[in-house]
Length: 262
Image 1 (tube, rainbow, N blue to C red):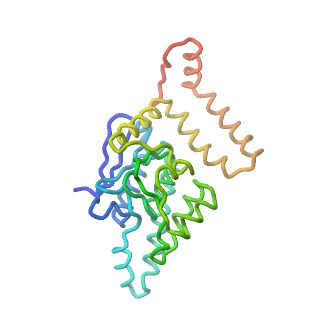
Image 2 (image 1 turned 90 degrees about the horizontal axis):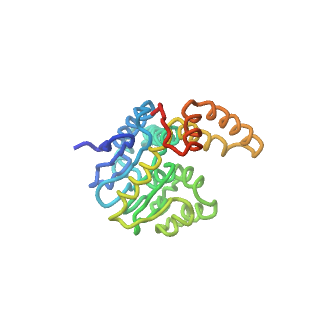
Image 3 (image 1 turned 180 degrees about the vertical axis):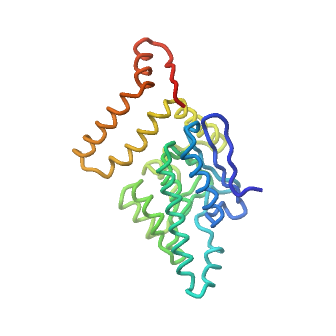
């Protein structure tokens, strides 16, 4: 049984974490499997949307604590292993943002520590009512410093710091209000609603969504004037696409666009 399954047809790729007995923890093997898929998807123009989900009772419970404990057996107490682990995980999380395709987290059960980090790292998130989110490492003496990076870039500063320092969980209503997730739905509708969002995005011109996702994140780190200068240039580049010309013409002529690109 594969630890990560790739499902889906057409323009949507569905990555399903399949280690329910470990609550889909981000073990060395899971991180490697996700990274391999992201590396491949980055070069696959035919895929226009990616969905990430988990099997069993949880989306993802964070790092594999049993595996981390075993790492302490090295002569240096695990220092080199831990550094390598967190570097590999950080690279994997950043690969989500670097993908040209929008990535949707399909969340249920719990998303804790690095699992919550993954939700925050995804471009979009749909969660089942009753899902609990937390960066609760502080409860066992390990501050969630790396999950903090993605979380603090998703929700307001004081709310992020409260979650990090108290270890308390938030529910879907709170997660939606803070902006950690896009919407909450009944568990029975989770897969359908996520697929609906994925298909809606996949139906758009892939080249336009690709340039738009990249620009979205780049402009966020700029001043207001720099952002307008940068995105103006992006708009110029986008306007010169043959398929954008066709899309505008189709809109004006009240007909479906005849796009040539994937």
